[in-house]
Every structure is written in structure tokens, then in C-alpha cells.
Amino acid sequence: MAPLSTLFTSAALLATGASAFTAPSQSTAVRPSTNLYENFGFDFAEDQVENTPQIILGEANYKKWVNSVDPDNMLNRQYAVLTRVRELGLLEKTAELGILSKLEKNGLTLEKAEALLPKLEELGLLSLVANNQQLLINGVAPLAVEGAPLLLPVVAGALDI
Image 1: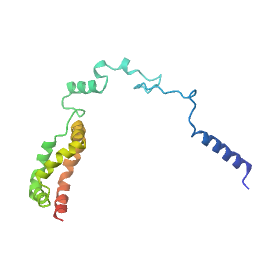
Image 2: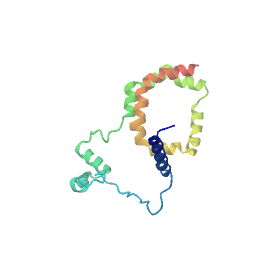
Image 3: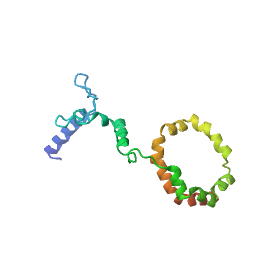
Image 4: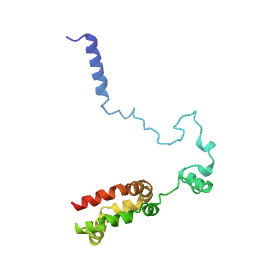
């Protein structure tokens, strides 16, 4: 038989655990404040409005200010997709590997790709791309373009199968 202390501990845990899954009564439920503070609500932290110049208060104002100080800053810089494609010679590699000919031989022509556009619009994918251009240019494009020299031979080999 188990010691009494183990039984009492188990009973206490079960009693408190069961009450954790019950809904709180309306009188004790207090809705938390939705106010956002950059000082995280601590009274000892400094107030951003008091200590920050109005010109850089907020993300949009800060980006404008950074551009006025240094036009070649990292905050507002965009990835140069076409420049990197030219520097890496991706079009030449695509032609050398015959990827477009292999796609056409496998049945994917430009007419078929163009016919997919209305279907993509129905699914909302084109609108999604249009609304997230900056994310795609600065997030996805560097991965695709910089990785393309390694992936193009793999794609060409896969199309031969």
C-alpha cells in the first residue's frame, strides 16, 4: 500500500488539475488590456514618446529618416534580381543545359503555362504574389537566384528521365 503522503499529494494534484479545465465564472474573468507599449508596460522603463524624436517614431517614419541620412542603407535596400541573374550567367546556363527544350519535349509549352494563369488567379495565388512583392524580392528571390547555379544541372538531369 502507498504511503499516506503520496495519496494526499496525488489527491491534491487531481483536485487542482481538474479545476484548471473549468471555465472561469463571469464575475472573476477580467479582460486584459490591449494597449501596446514599447516599454512593455513597465513603469520604470522610459517612455518612447518622451525620448524619441517624432521624425523617427514608428517604422514608416524611421525608414524615411534612414533614407534621408544614408540612401545606400541596408534597411531599405532591395535585392537586385536581374543584376544577379546576369552576373551568375543563369540564362546562358539554362540555354547550355537545354532546359527549355527538355520542358517542351515533356509537354510543357509556353501556351500551356499561359493557360494556367487564369486558374492561378482563381485560386488567389497571383494576388498573393502581387501583395507580397517586397517579401518575395528580398526573401525568396535571393534563395532562388543564388541557388540556381547548383540547381540547374539537377533540374536538367531530372528532365532527361
